[in-house]
Length: 285
Image (cartoon, rainbow, N blue to C red; front, side, top):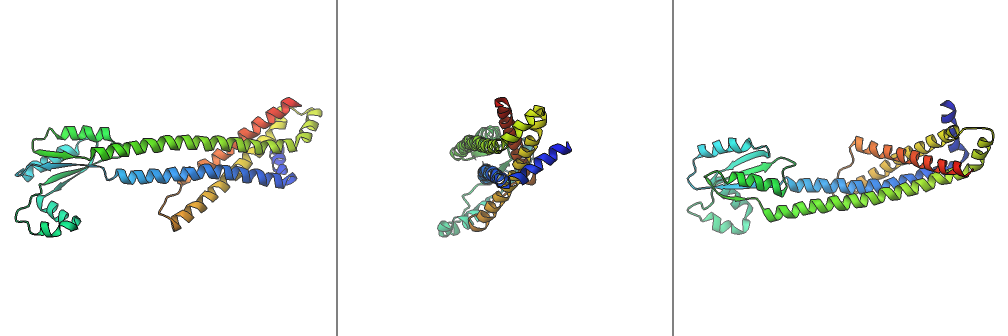
């Protein structure tokens, strides 16, 4: 094991330029993948922000006692999809309209009778903010006798669902394409390193070294290059994130486990590319 580690580390000293080229190539290949991951992460965050605005509004019949509304709130709060229920009185609804509808300030200010009904504003839990779950909750709410009208923006929700589906499909397709391109680039880079040491491999074969003995240093070398490239890719992604966050718009970066996953992905790619390249080369000699 010690010999394997020593030989793998010596490879960096024997060909420092080629090793640096391999690590840099791996880093930029994973940087592109990581950059796309950041775009997907921030897009998901934006969609979650929009999803938080999804709610169902139940307009109550005039004259509905507060006690009845309070009992209904307890029943609705027990729905597995419901996160919160807010009771909005007629006066609160009018005050909100005066505050938000500035263009109708004069009309709303001269009212003698409040035309706005009381309502229940129902927020849903994450995972239940799609069209199907919202529709199911709205249908259940129609069973309450005091419910005069129920609104939840069906057309808007359907557009949000389509946007989620499109983002998921496009993200998966582009992410897979970048990952395949990275594997090809990394494999080619590692292959160059193996070919650079083809004479050494041939000599080791002549003196009786087994395929496993020859292969191990290359596998470790590939894994180390992949890990170094992955770490450099994370650093480049972080630099891009800081630039965008400061100059363009507020954004988020990977959580530590997610950043570590990129490094591990690079390590695995380097290991696999080395394994394939060495196996092919050993079959030819």
